[in-house]
Image (cartoon, rainbow, N blue to C red; front, side, top):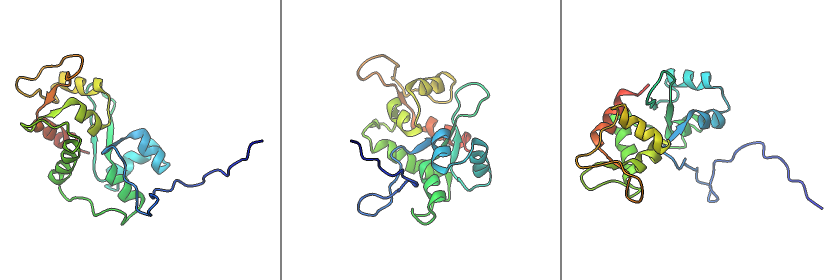
Length: 171
């Protein structure tokens, strides 16, 4: 005999201690933002254009279709006003916070470059997408770095090229 549980009507974004949960990945894709906010893709783009979702980027590697990523903190601030410290005012502050989160994962290299695996996590994309950004010239390999398969094969990307990409592709 099975006991039926009631359907959860609302997603509770609190941890057991009552604190608000943060998204694990720094950036969220369009599908995640749509699901979390229960809106359409057009609505998400309107929220970005209106500045209600303040920090978003088009990280497409090739082609015409947008590849939208939104900073998770912007989504949280929109969804639950006052639940987070206020959002940074400048792009430089946002980029610094994003790169800190990438470095916190121990995937930053001593010379300031980042492994492609750190960017995969930061941008919430596949390894192929990072390689496509490299191929398109949107990201730059660090000196003496190579792309290879296997353990330790994650190429090193210059921090400067990541900063330039984020500044150039911001909505």
